[in-house]
Amino acid sequence: MNYGLLEVLTLVGSLGLFLYGMKLMSESLQKVAGNKMRDILASMTSNRVKGVLTGVLITSLVQSSSATTVMVVSFVNAGLLTLKQSIGVIMGANVGTTVTAWIITYFGFKMSMSTISLPLIGLALPLLFSSKRSRKSWGELIIGFSLLFIGLDFLKHSVPDINSNPQMLEFLKDFNNPTMSAIFMFMFIGTVLTILIQSSSAAMALTLVMCNEGWISFELAAAMVLGQNIGTTITANLAAMVANTSAKRAARAHLVFNVLGVLLALVFFNPSMHVLDGLVRFLGVTSPFPRAGEAIEATQHAMPIALSIYHTMFNILNTLVLIWFTKPIADFVTKITPIKDQEDEEFHLKHIKTGLLSTPEASLYVAKQEMVHYAEITQKMFKHLEKLYKEEKDKGYSKRLSKIEKYEDSCDNMELEIATFLTKVSETKLSERSSEVISAYYKAIDNIESIADSCNNIARHIDRKRGLKLDFPEMIEKKISIMSGYINDAIAVMIKNISSDDTVNMEEALSIEREIDNYRNILKSDHLINLENKVYDYQVGIIYNDIFSEYEKMGDYIINVTQSLKTVK
Image 1 (tube, rainbow, N blue to C red):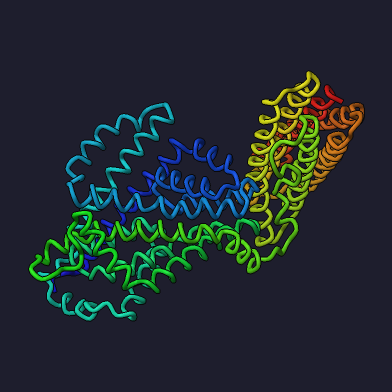
Image 2 (cartoon, rainbow, N blue to C red):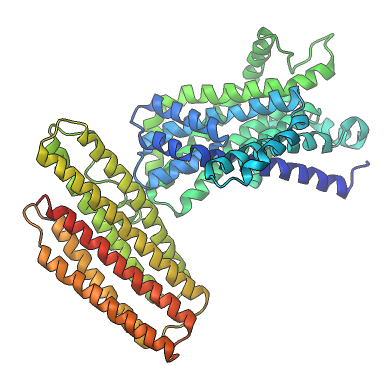
């Protein structure tokens, strides 16, 4: 068989080019339409049909069900989507990913896209050097699209020709009869292949090429498609490993949904092949199942279209059947994924559960309660920051740093959710007083989010110090500890002022703020003197200066919260 190492590497390289093109296209699409996609997901309601349609739309845009499900997991992690809402979006993502198969089938096999791919790259090249980010993203999108089809073209020409390789033909004869054992084996191959290359779309493309070249029978290709639907759930489950319990449940719901669908498809596998045969003939498409007098070559080249129809039929029917079992699926994954840590669930909004209340005033009271909860989360984030600074063990340090990063992302999303709620309140008929309260609350949540940003910035400075293996002198350690104590007191006063239904203790807040500013000035003055006297290295001094300067900024954000509330209390 004339198929050596060079040919194998060419095949792998072709697949790599296809994967890179898909990755580049997917990422640039998310850059071009990222905010719009997040707005759509963030505005989801409990309507399961809307959830499915949203999943279809998002996945059709980004050409990756994995990207959609990972995004859904992150939104569940932040409390912006409930478990039931996420299941609807994930179901839609499965349907949306079938668009990729149709694009590949129609453009990749029906017409030679590779002939126009290079000219497209030539047109997109100037966009890559644009100073505008949006134009650059469009350039990456076009180049990614072109590379995808160049890779597919290479893939088609690099797979071994069975007619020229009788030994390979002899091997595949064992699978000519689609027995249940062969179907299960190829389903397993489809699962493993998708897990390895982390893309069901790429695995689908490879399966389409195998069909087109006559490697395997249609039934075995259909079995691989079923396996790919299981394999694609791995990405979301990997993303959920570091997320909270609700996000883990959403990822497991994706797995349960796809496994149930595959089990149903296996039960009705043979009948579904007969239905598919009748459907494609009814549509005027050559059937993948040859009859007497029909050319085998024509049947072979018809397989990609029939496989795309099967892929779409499976996902649509699976969604139509299981959409009515959203609650049982949610209950099942809730049961198998219990809450292990109460802190794991704290990022959910506690008070803003439904729409607006009967009066704007009542809605604003709920918003205030949520703002207290939001401030308490930033306080916990700061506590983790203090522990991070003192952590010596690598494992504990990495876990603490990861937790701070999760807090920062969640604080961003909580600000968005509270602000969205306030916007809805502002659209109702408001008194002058209520309008002032909303304005004050907008400023307050913006500054609370900035406190979280400062915590994350300090964590990065600490991580930089650890990465460079720098040791702070004891005098610096003591000074940072004192500054940290001031910030701790300031946050406590801020939370007390947000919680108050009557007045704001402005004098106490300003007193601590003055202490922070004065101490920062002392630290800055001492720092310059110490640098001149070479008390510590310049590199140590840079990180030290960054840390205490960020602490002072945090103090400003904290007093800003109190000052914004002072105007309405």
